[in-house]
Image (tube, rainbow, N blue to C red):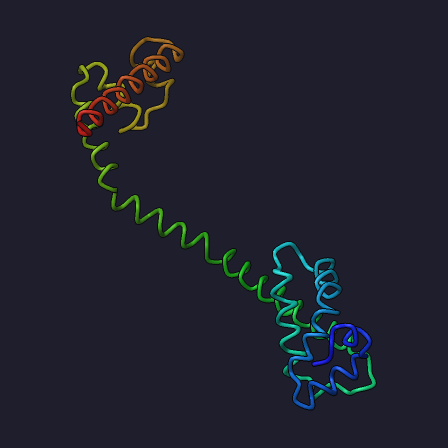
Length: 195
């Protein structure tokens, strides 16, 4: 291979002739000359999701492999950039397909996973649920009645107010206090399990 100074003086046609005559390492001259301009061009035409370096690399590999199809005397840089344009289009199509696949199937897969998790509570979730049941059982009958009405029977606050003769605000406050008490009870029991 000639010294670097003479490499800079070679035309693309001269380098391609060398490569076609068996000096494959001469293709490095083309890569060094066109790598930055090609990557810059790709970066200005690609979306942020595209790996510009990957597309540039593929473009150089394809150009090298199809060098016999290049007609000496024509614009090599233009030929390479055309290859890069098609590689960029192919990559954008691939990314759109992946995004379309995820858009179509991700919600369904997420729903399945959530259903599975709900159907099969984990050990910690099951333990918390067991503790919650015990905590609810430890409430007085009067407080358990509020829980039954609200969460088992789904009775609205207004109906609970009418049944007890208390204001809606008082019912809200009572439910908040019960939830807080139950939360504290579950946390205390969980701490006891960890010991």
